[in-house]
Amino acid sequence: MSAASRELHIKKAIEDVRQRPGIPDTARLPFRGHFEILEVIELPLDVPILNARSFRIAPLLADHPGRSIVEQDPESPEAQEIVADLVRKSHRHLVGLKVSLEAEGQGEPGAITRSGKLINGNSRFVLLRDLVAEGLIPASTTIRVAVLPGNTNNREELDLESVLQQQKDFKDEYNLVSRVMMLQTLSDNNMTDQAIATSQRDKAANITRLREVLVLMNRARALPATTLPLSVFVTTEDQQQNWIDLLKEVRELESLHGRDAADEHIRGWLIAYFSGHSAVHQLRKAKGDWVKRDLVPHLSESGRDGDLLNRALSSMPESEPQLVVVPDGVDLLEVDSDEASLQASSITQRVLDLAVQASQDPEGEFPMPDGGSLTGVEIRRALHGSVAEGLNDAAQRKKDANRLVRPQSNAEAAAASLKSLVDALEEVIDDTEFDPKRDDLRSTLDLIQTRLDDAVSILSDAAPAELKPESLE
Image (cartoon, rainbow, N blue to C red):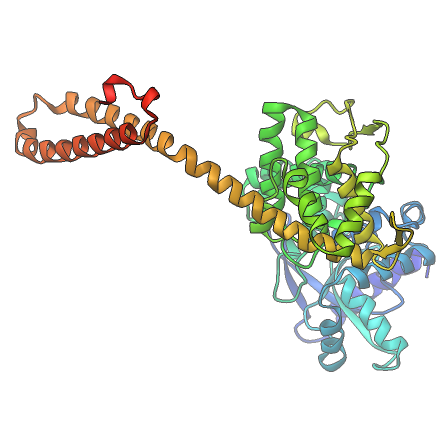
């Protein structure tokens, strides 16, 4: 069906609704800053076209080999088939939704432009067509859609989709990658973070931070030897806290030690991630030099497969440093967008490359030093166990380090509290209303003095004789 025919069909459907006796079918949708009542029409399934710019499919489309086909002519049959396939792959409750549509039909209406593009309801549209093709529902089945005003612009379409995706009662909530790409698209269409936050019922600072997460994802996927598709970070579990934690750590490391140190931290984080340890409490342990210090030793002690991996990693040639182009948008992390960094040829890099390859090709065969090979599944299994032990060792070492510095930290906190006490006492010492409280304060100060004497005594008794200062005798 041509674009002109599609528009005429929708126009006629609207006229038919208006001439029909009785109360017309309408939908109340959030639009242009308020709720607007829109007319609902029914259309044959050969009339609407899928939204090729839907936020839901954006992560999968970004790396799809047919992306150029969709971008050049999104309404072409070939492009529409690609979009339909991505819609099926991106919906996490596809089977349940399909069963519901077959048994109960469509509930809430979708939303469509006057030109026939679905802004909302793409998944239901694809599944209704599939059900017809499978002979499970009549060929005469229609789709109900609310029609947007004729003067709706692109920004308003994007804003409407971003708001409707929050209505979880009949929607599959967007995964994190889809959401951050959606926020960036809204920003690219001249919406401020405050405007986006208002439509999303969120805070502007959170919107800014999530857009920075997208930059970080692009940076992370460029660190392995072969740049990964952004879709590798699409998961069924909510990963938002993991990425926000990583963003904070990257900022801190970059400000203190530079970009290379931050990239090394990201590599270690990715090793845990691709080894199957993506829970928040697990990834928070992936800090410092844990890969070389904690992971690699465990590999050689984890049986035949682990020993082979350890030998394979040791035998890998040191690669020549190569330039890694900084992904677009990296200026959000306060790094020059023209800057490039040297890819580390470290053990961390080699473990990361191995973990990524095994994760992306679980059935693949990887040659080992003994002349044999391990599959991606076997490599991932060996890494999974060793990474778990390495992360636990790293966490314990940090705990031990904290134990050793805790006395000094507590002493400094006590000193600061005592200074505040002196300041507060000087402020009220001449106030007659304070007189009744003097005795209580003296009792507390006596207790503090006792605790100080105990600390000095412990320190004095435990110190080596040649280090005992006279002041502690």
